Amino acid sequence: MASPSDHPAADDLDLLRILCCVAWADGEFSPEEKALLDRLVERYVIGAGESDGSLAVAAEVLAATPEPLEALETLLPRLSGQDDRQLVVKLAYMMIRVGGRLGEESGINTREKVAYRRVVDAVGLPESEIEEAEWAGEEELARHGGLLGILRSRFAWLPG
Image (cartoon, rainbow, N blue to C red; front, side, top):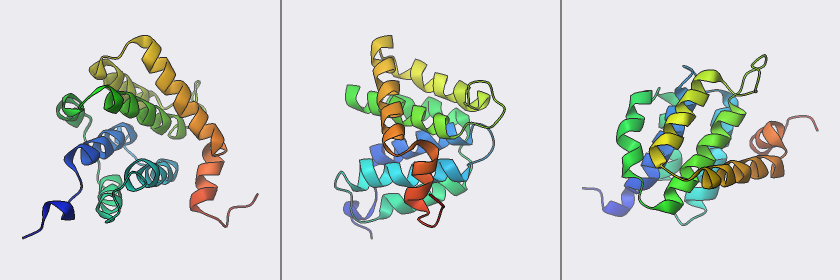
């Protein structure tokens, strides 16, 4: 029988599943979204003390398996606390920013934007906190050189 430490914490898995719901909203999980998910797992989960690798494995499975948008209805109410709600808004925003397609007016995929709005509506944060979370997401993406920076961090062989 596996010990509790052999499995990722439920709230970490919920966070990963929420991000995957947003990414899968358009019917695909792009390489850019996968690279971002890997980086977010490394920074926010493994870097925060989860070192057994089970969440990295869970992220691989979730990225490979379509997560229905309806799962948000179950997952979002389980977020515990203000910090978790702000974090999920920030990370979901980052996911829709890298998941945009060429030719879309805002650079954000329309179906993923709808999923993001569901996240925002469900967490119930004041507009000022939503804007702050989005700004923090933009800053983090910019620090890593946007999409190309994220891909470079994952794929060192990409040209400069």
